[in-house]
Length: 77
Image: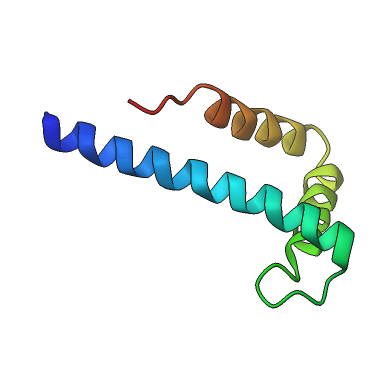
């Protein structure tokens, strides 16, 4: 069981780092613009995701709720 626990800890840490990098990418893209080497298309991708979820009506709302539930209920341990 310690192997599974270790893998869960690594995945949780990588997810936390990814979310931090996503926040950094959004802030830098808004401040500097979309000409960043690594973070250039992040805002455009997020806008496209919101558009696609919004165009699907209730299904998009349900998917958004599931995504938020997954990220809010996870714990790194």
